[in-house]
Length: 120
Picture 1 (cartoon, helix red, strand yellow):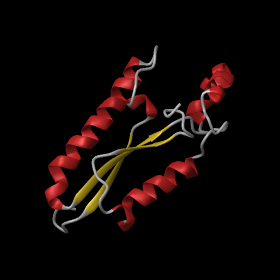
Picture 2 (cartoon, helix red, strand yellow):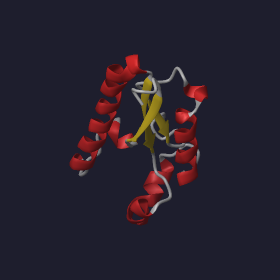
Picture 3 (cartoon, helix red, strand yellow):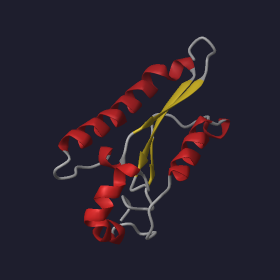
Picture 4 (cartoon, one colour):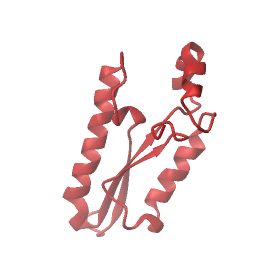
């Protein structure tokens, strides 16, 4: 990317990288690390024309969330203003946009895809 003078890196963090979650300290710490790495890398590689951003998914319909939803799905759904979980396609669309020329001035930022969960 540096040789060609441009590029886009999109890291996958989580809404857990934006606040704390009881009983999830290791996961939360790792996702906070991804957010910090994203911001720092954006500063370090800006002069090379490389953009670095992160996507922070909320509750997405995946194998990873099945157990959590089985245990506390009603509580989680009550906190999602759009009243539904996201899909992997929603995350993919954000990643595609961040890699596109339409996001040419976007770097060093985190983008939540969470049905307004963190806005509530």
